[in-house]
Image (cartoon, rainbow over all chains, first blue to last red; front, top):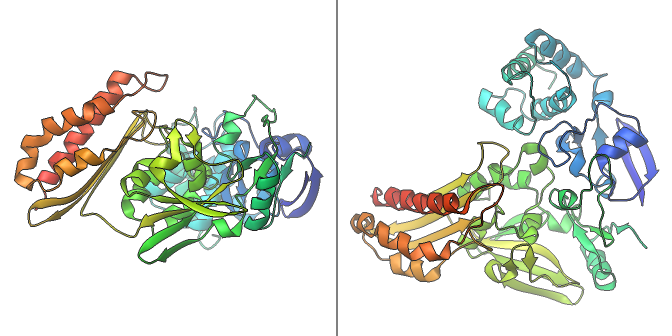
Amino acid sequence: MKIEFILNDKPQTIDVHPARRLLDLLREDFGLTSVKEGCGEGECGACVVLMNGKAVNSCLVPAGNIIGNSIQTLEGFKTTERYKVIEKCFLEAGSVQCGFCTPGIVMATESLLSENPHPTDDEIKESLSGNLCRCTGYNMIFKGIRLAAERGKGLW
Amino acid sequence: MVDGFRPALLQEALKIRSEYDCTPIAGGTDLMVQKARGFALKPDFEKPLLFIGHLPELHKIIIENNQIHIGAGALLTDLLNSKKIPAIFKEAIGLMASPPSRNLASIGGNICNASPAGDTLPYLYAVNATLVVMSAKGERTNPINEFITGPKQTALRRDELLTKIIIPNKIFDVNFYRKVGQRKGMSLTKAAFLGMADIENGKLTDIRITFGSVAPVIVRSWEIEKYIIGTPLREIKAAITEIQNQFEPLLRPIHDARSTAVYRKKVSLRLLEDFLKNISKEK
């Protein structure tokens, strides 16, 4: 099926089976390897990307569902000011250890802050509830997000 | 063979549905996992896919004649963000999966997946939700308890699509929902309990009790509800054991990787007890 969509702000057309997972399309067809496969069933959040600005599990999205939509991965997001703030705050708070979950967490953070620039601790926990991290114990990640919301005032 | 169809309008989708044996797919959060073949592999569908999640006709949430009409393609996130959806229903939806999955999953998908553990179902059974099903020939309606015929089985015909869910625009006086899972977030349901009641002059004038994940379909008993209605609040506590005994044979949970049958039954009957105790404290 012919799939026309926007990827990291650029229009793209690709001919793939409509059941192909967005995760594989991004990693294999476009070489965007920030998108990780963890569980492959929508539980771990390592494959989270933005679809029209909202966090989605790319392992659950069939290619047929991205037609006409805008997809953003960390590769596209990293050129923005908002990313730079998140990166700095994550470094400072120790939010990253092995790094496997980090791209998904960064995209979930962007999805959260773009909708809710001043989240409470509970709102941060709720919106990150679909992103598993086996290293940090989460507290450092929550700290990084709180810092980013504070320092990035006006960016979201 | 055609791999898939992505019509622009509902009418076109219905026409395709009448001409081809195909698998309708909205968000894909259930189907993509059920058909998954493993790491980095394309899920295998036996039939061509009919994409319907994007159809604008399926996304409306409106109130008409004091009923809430929910498009079958409405996302779980849309329901959580809508002021029209009753809080107790949102409570159940908010405990489903996680935000990145709720941004994809539709209410119609949860119904058509017809899992005994489907988390929108206890509420939809409790309020006698009416489902609107369309084909190229026209539409028909089905109460949800007739639409879902068994685990993973529905009365949806080969040429039909579920298009709308109609629920009453009503809030009960007492609302009680508990989902029992392995952990607080991101969990699949081991057992779910929903209780709602109306109270007038110290008496129960209406009660709705549904159990999820403890039988092939959601458990609701109109007979037991009828038996309870009219009970004065001060007599409810004394009736709890009798009500539990009446429900007990209806709960026929399975033992599987997620939980044991014994636990599911026990916890469900205790949640019923908790709900009834809560009611007896109402004024």
